[in-house]
Length: 87
Image (cartoon, rainbow, N blue to C red):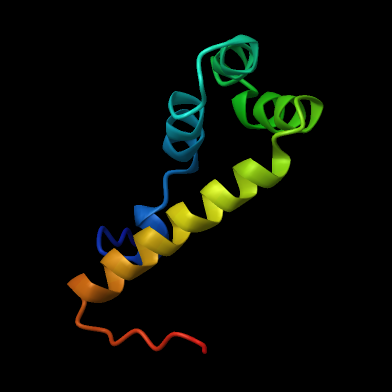
């Protein structure tokens, strides 16, 4: 398949989103447990399970949605694509 370094989906790095989410949590048990969850193989599954276990799912999904929106806006701006926001 062809690679596209300028394609929108190429700009998505959900692992980095998870790491930044954890970095922004207050220090404590939840932060430590999530750091442990994102290390090594199976990080996405462990992170998702731990987010639910710790009651942080709504906070995570809001953070992730905002991160996706930021990537989309940056990509559109870089590619001269007008963004029309819903009212």
